[in-house]
Length: 250
Image (tube, rainbow, N blue to C red; front, side, top):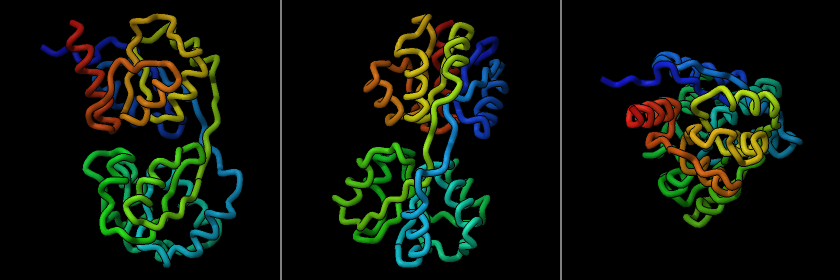
């Protein structure tokens, strides 16, 4: 019989307003979720480019959102500036189901998602090049997706819709002594976590679970090897990966 995550303590590093979904799924499997946000979401340094792109939105064939944070940031900015959601391009893409739900919660219909919820699949599968694409990103995201889309013939306008700041580094360090596993749900959280722990875990048996390839790549770039990577790059997939790991450990 599977023991699931019964009795395990799992560190959740997502921003405070987003930690609830992961914490709830972990606790439903019998774990104790230890929530210590490692990053906070902040506005971009300047809204100039974003405001200009939003004004020109009807001229784009696609708008593609690559995170829930990007959705919330753009929707909030459009409300602040009095922009009408109807001016968004008719064709809207989302990197995965969480981003799709966030858009639909704002009344935006999503036409397309990739077959796997990664930037690589967005670059490979976005339909109908050549086309003009408004790409909503974090300010620390690399240009790999932008360049891959351009290589397929898309005309890409990138908007950096939000930034991240490291927070609670001391609390993260302290929590590491008390948990069985750590969940890393984005490259920015991976960076903050490695900064907090200095790239070394106090207990080498602590399980580091990455949500997907981009997060794992960032971990390795910083010298930290994830213990496991979720096959399904979602919050639910992350929890399933942890369950599978601990089931094998019994």
